[in-house]
Length: 240
Image (cartoon, rainbow, N blue to C red):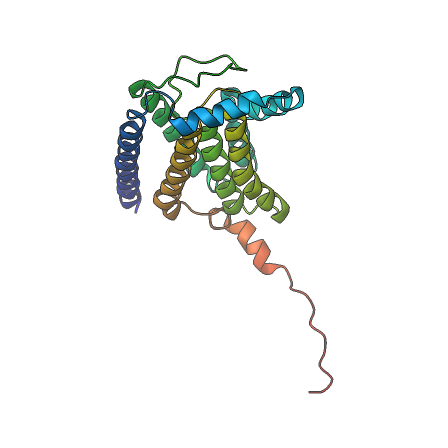
C-alpha cells in the first residue's frame, strides 16, 4: 500500500512538473512579444497617472502592501501553522505546492522576459525583475485560492469559508488595479498574472487534491464524533 501511495505521488509530481513547464513556455512566448507597452496599456496607464489623488494613493498603497512578499509568505505560513497545531492538515499540500510553483514560475518567467515598466511616474520602488507578469497579483491569486481550498478541506466555519472565497476573487482584482494605478505594471501584466494564477491554482487542485484526505477522513475520531451527535428532534405527527 505504501509503495502504491509513493508511486501515485510521483506521478502527480511529474504531471505538475509538465504543467508547470507548459505554463512557463506559454507565458514566455506571450511576454516576449511585448517588450514595452501596447497602445491600450499606455492609454490606461496614462489615465490612471493623470487621475491620481492623495486618498487613492493611500488606498492603493495598502492593497499593494497586502500582496508584498513578506505578507504573502506570512499568511501562508500562518495558515499552515494553525492547521498543524489543530491537527487539520487538509489542503495544506495544495497550499504549499501552489505557492512553491508560483514563486518558481514567476522568477523563471521574469528571468526570461525582459519587459520595461510603464513610462509613468512610479509610486513604489521598482524591483529589478521584469514587469511581466505582476508578481503581486500572481501571488495573491494563488495564495487566496489555495486558502479557499484549505478552508473547505478543513471544514472551517461557514462564515470564514465564504469570506475567503470573496477575498480570493476581490483581492487579486484590487491588487491588480492598485499596481496599474501606481505605475508599477501594465494592464496586460496584470491580466497575465490573473490568468496564470487561476490556471495554476486549478491545475494544482485537480492533480493534488484527489490524493489528499480531507480533515474528516484524516481524523476519524472527529468524524465519528459528528456522526454520534443526535440530530434535531422531529415533531410528532398526531394524524398518523
